[in-house]
Picture 1 (tube, rainbow, N blue to C red):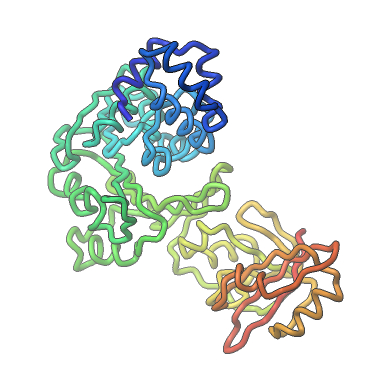
Picture 2: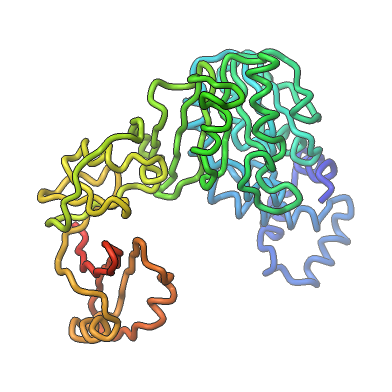
Length: 397
């Protein structure tokens, strides 16, 4: 897409009736598109068609997507509105901030609120053009089309969202990101450009390895000025946020559950007893599991571990579902496929929700093997305890 021409057309204004037709996308006939090209030769119609398609995808993340411009990569990888607003709140009352790898401005449009000075840095020209358009009502942003490693202005806070898919391939190793984690940390530890950093990392990174290599006694920086946040949005872990310097918190790990804004902090070293199956089973939010704070949650709600390897809690009394999902244990069965098929038939199960923990087969594979016929619904949890597998029939509270 030619973003300069596209944005110029959008700023000049698209006739409402033309926009309405172009938003039909693939439903717009070829003959009608040819007619529009002849009638409006000055408009980049192909780019506008793609633009409206990207806007449609962007609505999943932004309430104002119809006012924004996206790149294909940007709409896929940028933070959502919920996440962007959280990052802004998390930054606190700093007056100057740099958004490194700002992309199309998904976070920038919120980080720029109530700041005196904001730097938006990205090497990709198209992304930066989109960011300018998406943040055009912000007069406090300085756009820098350069490599992050060359950024040289002192600010209160650096927020960074490094590219985790350079050359289009997903990278788990933090040194294969662009820029690498080491290059980002050097801005704080070596060049001392900021008082603190917030670095957005992939949910699947080995954060314990990063902790050891960079912040441990023998790590490159050997510092206590760091902490981790594990952030979920509607139950899906979206990112691990590395907090450095004055952004670091006392507790090394925090789970943040959005959009509710609930938080759970701890060391990850909390311990509670294993109790086996009790009347209720609690499935913690995945951000809590990822942070290793399941046992801390158990302490908070008065539950015990079902098994030390499963990330599930169990108790005798019903509790709030603020931090996950609560189920009542209806029946406990041994794992035997033939017996389960018979059980499902007898119970007239036509809709089956399958959950697994420590089970080698995928949910899709299991579902394919069960022949469902009936009007009833069931929740089935298959877990490995010891050397065998057990099946819990659950009911939603």
